[in-house]
Image 1: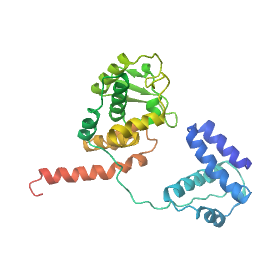
Image 2: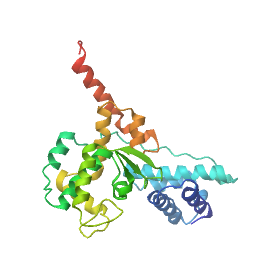
Image 3: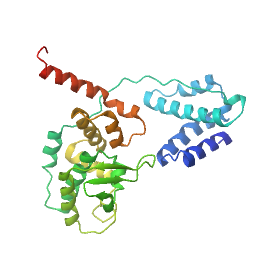
Image 4: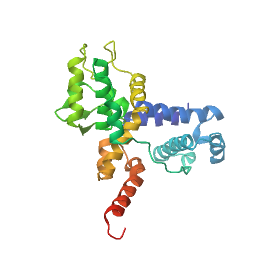
Length: 273
């Protein structure tokens, strides 16, 4: 690994304080290119970089690697006075915008009400899935929640992507489901979501529960939360804050839902529609 790449990784770890997953992604993307050519990224011209990138057909994978390269070259341009550190910027591959998969409130509640709540595991699954839909949390954030993070009807989300703490309101129905689960749970722990052994619930177990009752992944509940807010008239910046997106660009994937909702409203209510 070149000294420039080591400096960049130190920068995003200490100064930018990116998440462990993000740092690993940058490390893999950039170090693999250096290993492929057995030289520093600063010694590579654009032709060789593009030749390496041409091996990837998936546009989302390609754009992630392009993002890593742009961040690295931008860092080097600002930090190093070298001829090789000239300003470089690779254009992203265009990806057709697609509507994030989401479920309606009626669909979610109908399926969750079929859960057998006669056992504490059933109460946990019901509370967990309802909580995910009520808060829009990432599954990693949800499983890191501790009991004292819930303050009345507000949730303090501390273990977030990029370490950016935020406060999220929680629906009364979800809080009541959590209390029923807590009262029935036979184990004591600072963490809220536990498995049958009393240990912190794993991502795989949470995924299985979501798949079993909703036939979807936990991330679909996050999309369903955001979609419900947009259709209800919430501002994109409010949704950005609630979801914990660092950039509004990430939240803008829901813009076309907002536009469609406006169109449907006009068609329903305008006399000339």
